[in-house]
Length: 526
Image 1: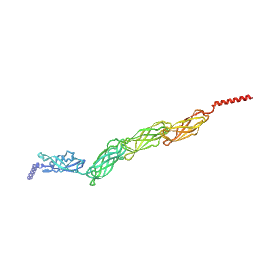
Image 2 (image 1 turned 120 degrees about the vertical axis):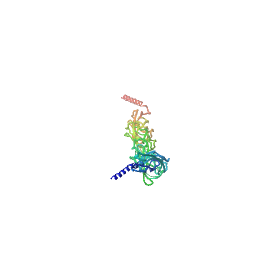
Image 3 (image 1 turned 135 degrees about the vertical axis):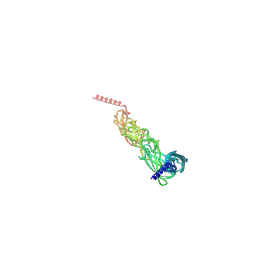
Image 4 (image 1 turned 120 degrees about the horizontal axis):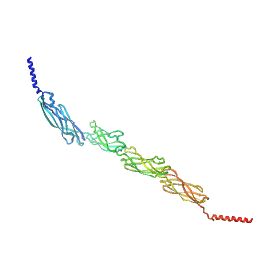
């Protein structure tokens, strides 16, 4: 029994004396660097991922639970210390923290590659620094630490791939209207694409595509360096500001391997043209109450786009004004161009002279061939006072008692347009009469005069004085309307009849003498 106790006690002493040796561990981490994702895209900033892996080396251990103390790399940093000139490295130093044995940490490095960089392999130099414990004996308080630094050079690849660019943006869309937005899409990359589809999105609700924020266009195949012109129809809201509106585009396509891919987002902008506007200036009028006349003016395209197939319409709510041809075709009117116009109108005798507001409205087609209508264009039109259609004066108006002769009357067209088929009618009262009271003039130009002739008789018992004769006219205007003029008075001068025998008082006196003589003779005979 005592012997067993002594043996057990000896074993215990051996275990206690060996405890410090069992707690000792010695070793170091071992870091290596590999490239996890090395693909770079020309004309873009890409992220290359470097993996830092720790496969530690253990020199001595008596307690595996302590191995991590010497196998862990602490305070690991990765610094890019060099790169080929074609690469613009935009990451400096990365802190990865601690990397345990059998683990890895990732170091993402941002690198920009210019568009003109050729595809191929390029080098990046990395410096890795870290601290670690090389020996650890906790029972003796031994902690031996070291710092390590090493440099590696890794290869990254600039891959051939399609890239896209939007250029030469032009806008034919006006504020308040729709129109084309045209731009070029170019494959600036090194590989062709097929079945390319472009998606265009508006970033502002003031710009839509047939009411939607997005429109899609088929592009098809694009070889490296090839350009395709794309035109979309954009709607710009009325009242929208005239400024740059942002559009974003992306392309879905099939690459050389037949795999589906999508481009990066391409952002560009366009400025719509100013709202299509017109003006009416230099309005003049020859309108008069009871006459035909003309409204003239100048139609001005004050917008920045050509208005095609312009038709200008004149409207009025005045029932006493009849616009004979209310529409006039002006054709294409370029931006800034001025075109004269005129409308003929008939003003009734019931109208009132003065300024009246007429409305002009243009219909036209925009650059897309779509029909549009302008805002109302107000014009102030003057209607002149009524005037006599004709000026009438007698040419030969002197007649003797009991005589019949011709009455010559001069008539002048006071209107500003010719008249035709003028039928003149003479009206008389006793002692004047006429058996030939009508005359006819085929045409009488504006301001033109002519003489018409009527037959006129004066009663023998007419008192010598001036008598009125009336004349009116039935005629056709230049617009084809038939009108009857006012009645005009022509003075007729009646004079006493001239005689070649003795004067009438002498003849009467002689007869009285004869009569008295005869009576005396009879008396005396009695």
